Length: 256
Image: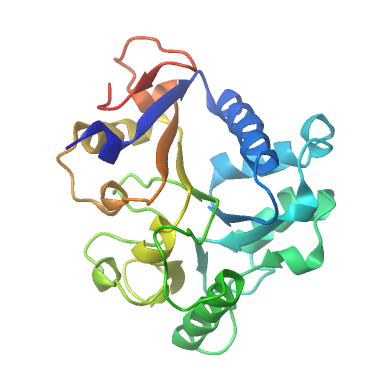
């Protein structure tokens, strides 16, 4: 497997350092983009820290909020006020604390049937994109943020689920593998991004991350092949507690 396929790694000392580094990076890439900047968001504790930092006094005035539109890579099929809602997490951590135009926020529908909600969100993405067919030369997203589960899932692309083979639909309902139904973007939508960034923290992630970086894994996260850049922002614990100490700026195409 080529280094380009696997992507590059930046290792940070701890989750807070990782979130601060990614916040600075996001500001830079958003400010260098002319016009609209579309972001697909991830759930989880590490992104929550990042979102809070972006809306903090330290970073808020540097971020081009009016140019950025927010989408969700996946969502639990629960109400927006449910504690498990990814939308609620982002709303409380960032959206209510920053000058985010209301029309720039595009949460996943959570009413009606899951299948209908998936179709409606696909139309939302297509309306934003301006077409119903994805062009590799014109990515849907400028930035896609992803997490990594200990089982290798990312977004709600779960091991063994039929959604992994979906190549036509941009959004799908996932009814198995978790206590609640989920709505997820599929590989075609996730991969249509100028930059895909995995945020990975915690020692419990070290085994699956090491397997993916070795290049011989077929877990869902290992199958991401974006049209643009793939980067892994990883804290020292996730990089492997036995690895040599690396700092930001240490980049690897083949893992540690």
